[in-house]
Length: 217
Image (cartoon, rainbow, N blue to C red; front, side, top):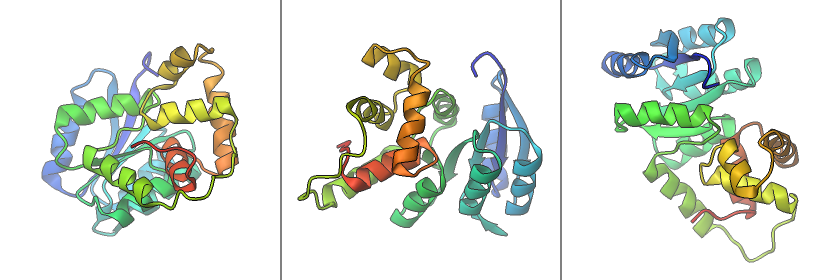
């Protein structure tokens, strides 16, 4: 995707935050903001009509919730990458967003440059997550009952790849570290999704953590 323009839909109801995101993302030569929407309704319309690569959405909107936009994007645009930027970093918000299909979760105190870099990480196959949110996910692992051996759903190779994406490595990074062809990584990823019954990297990592397959602490 680095060889072409990254098309973005932005959904943010706060005017100042929306302008800041438009300015920072729009300043990148290879980023194209197709829509900057202040409401759930406008965001849903953009998802249905605009052929975008990335959805950046807030969660709390004046006429709805970002969770529903994430689910809509997963249904209408399965290949679309989704990242949340929100003030809501509580347990329910994080879990629901990842379960709905978000592959990244940033808090609104994230610097504009870091948001730009996070979008690049997202489209390269990573799962950018704010430090405090990542810490919360680790706490889930530490608080989980690990007394029983988890069911071994995945092959050794799939476990290696899942570990890589859990650490935020791109597909290219994973291929290089495992000395395999980068063309085979997406195939393994699809098998992981199928076995874990998920639809995104973030959801796969969270499901694997919940099942005790991996521990990222």
